[in-house]
Image 1: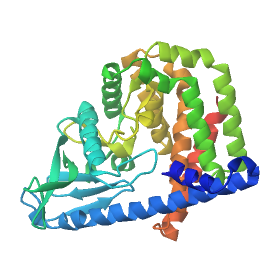
Image 2: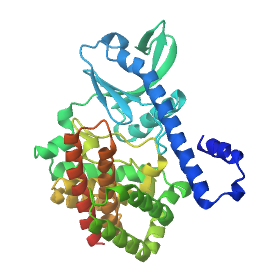
Image 3: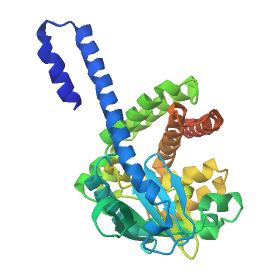
Image 4: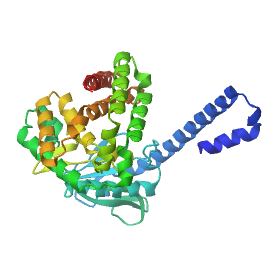
Length: 381
């Protein structure tokens, strides 16, 4: 679409006679028009979805007995909670790195989410269910034409989320040891190979860091200090230059795997067993990574929550179960990366018009804390 707009503009005049500034102006205009069209289509798609969302707020839309329905939203999902189950619908959005814009794509990624998450919590992820419409009746597993799809999951009580258990002092070394063993065994079985290995190569890692720095430039002086921004860039670049052979060795030894992609305390339930859920299905680049990066995410999360004792214990036990001694050489680097990404994503809330001033103020403080942590890791590279 953006390319089509550009061709239209260039047909109007001979671009070979244009100045650089004129061409830049045309490119900017095309970009603005593209964004307007994209926003318009996004609005239409989300409006079309709303009649399904409204229908699912009523008990008669379910193929189970329902007394109460709770709706939660993220920027990419509608999540409906009943007493026993969770139904997750993907929003009809296209953010570039994520594309749920068509019904077929949403069905595909529902199936992908089911398959990926069954690796670590199979009995929690149950099935992909069609949501049908017939004679203006919208129903899960009903008659008629599928108008949406949902991932159906077993509901785990919120009091079992690891984030809350950490706050309550209910996470100990015994639990962390179990997690380390689960993650190490998961990584041993996870898919590897030449194509996946490319995502852990130094050029790809450099690309990820460049993207981070470009996307946070606007927040320098607001959520990340100029000093931290420069320090992290300098230390990261220096570390990558010094360790070219190490990154190549990780790729050669198949340490780059099809990982979970998002292991932190907010994606772990501790109930009758440990459930590590919500693996990233929508973008391979976020899922294919060095196992050291995956371990570093949870370790960083524990550091952030002032449980560095459990963070160190997690790494020690993971190394023991996996035999991956070199992981510790990369740990500060990947901890820095994970903390920086969390700071970046939290900073994005400041540009969200649907978020109030109080929440933005809290997001500012949280983002600063993540960037400060990233800078601290960078100092030890």
